[in-house]
Length: 126
Image (cartoon, rainbow, N blue to C red):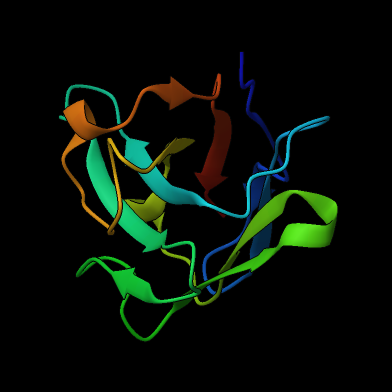
């Protein structure tokens, strides 16, 4: 079964940057759609960014202009580069994955993804 491992979270000052990684050791995930989500305390999980198997990307409003998603299929890893972070970005960040025929295109519907990582905490504070 596909297991996702997130890393790269931590404490950063406002205006700083972090790069999150989502890895799937031992799996070939060229055909997977990968989404990044986040959940802050007391809030629903929201979509951040997504990348499809052909490299097409889709960014949610929270990410536009600040976050960039990319994938390295040779390393079975998807990255989320986050710049100009603010305290409102504080949350647990999760990556999720699924593949055709169940999922073919990017979506921020959490129910469309079968596989989820454990999450990585991002805290933006001075």
